[in-house]
Amino acid sequence: MTTEERESMDTDVVEAQPIIRRHPQRPKGSYRLSDFIIQRTLGTGSFGRVHLVRSKHNLRFYAIKVLNKERIVKMKQVEHTNNEQHMLEAVQHPFIINLWGTFQDAELFTLLRRSNRFPDPVAKFYAAEVALALNHLHSMDIIYRDLKPENILLNQDGHIKIADFGFAKPCTTTAWTLCGTPDYLAPEIVAQQRYNKSVDWYALGVLIFEMLSGLPPYHSSEPNHLVLYDKITRGPSYIRFPTAFHENATDLILKLMESDPSRRYGNMQYGAGDVFAHPWFREVDWEKLAAREITAPYLPRINGDGDASAFDSYPEDGVTSTYGAGGHDPHGHHFPDFDYTCPVL
Image (cartoon, rainbow, N blue to C red):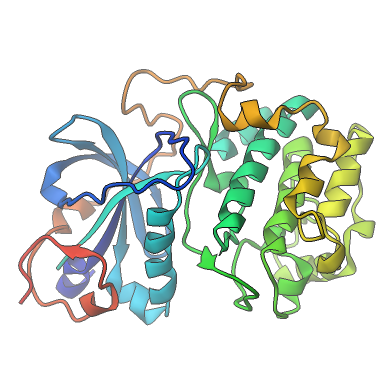
C-alpha cells in the first residue's frame, strides 16, 4: 500500500442497538480515530476492512468500517459509498444496524453453516424479521440489493440486524446496475433489464430456500457464473425442492422468486401485505415481532461485551498503524459528508 493509499480512508461507525421509533432524528456524532481503541479485524473486503473497536469515552463497543478512497474512486464506487452513508443516517429500524457517525482521514451465516439447515420455525422467524426490515427500507424508497446470510447479523438477544449497505440505493422507480451476489440475483438483473425494489423480495425467496436446505436453490459446484445465470433465467419451475419442505414454504418461495416482477409477491397491489398474509407466516404476530417481544430461537453465546468469537480471524498485517496520518488527499472531495479529523495538506 502506498503512502497516499494509507492516508486516504473513509470510516463508518455502527453499533447494533435497537431503536423502535419510526423516523426519529438521530444526533449526528463527531468522531475521530483517536476516540477508539482498535481491538481486531472482523472482516475484509475489496475496499477495506471492518474493525471491532472500543470507545475511550463511553467504553462501548462499535464496528468501524474503513474504506480505501483511492480504490473506491478507481473502481467507480464513489456513489455507492456516499449512498451507504446517507441511507444509514436516515434509516432507523430494530432489525437494521445503526450508523452513529462517519469520518475520513488523510453473522446468521455462521449459525447456518454450523446448523447445515434450519428447522421450518427457525427459518420462518428470521425470514419474518427480514421481511419487516425490507418493507421498512422500501417505505423509505431504498432498494437494498445484497440480501444474503452473510449480511444478516444476530444481536445479543438473537434478533437480526441487516448490515452492509454498500449496494443499497435510493430508488423511487427503477434501477439498472448489475450488482449483488450471483445466487441471489433476480432474473431481470441477470438480463440487464431495468428493475425495481421487488428484486429484494426475490432475494428473500432465495434466502428462505437456503435457510431451509443449507444451499441456495440454483447452487452448483460449477464456478462458471454463466451456468448459474442460465438457471436463474429459466425460472423457479426448474428448482428441485427437498421433500422435507413444508408445502406453504415451497409456495411462498415460488411466489417470491416469480420470474415476472409484475406477478411477484411484494410487488403487486397489496405490496408487502401479500407476503405478511401468506399461510407460511400464519402464526406470526407481526406487531409483537416488530416490537421484539417474541423470543428468538437462538441466543448467541457471548462472553461479555466486545466478544467477537463468532467472527473469523484475519491477519491484522499492521494495517491500523497506517490510519489517521495527515497529508495530501486527492480523493477527499468525492466524500463531502465525511468530516475531516486530521490535517490535510
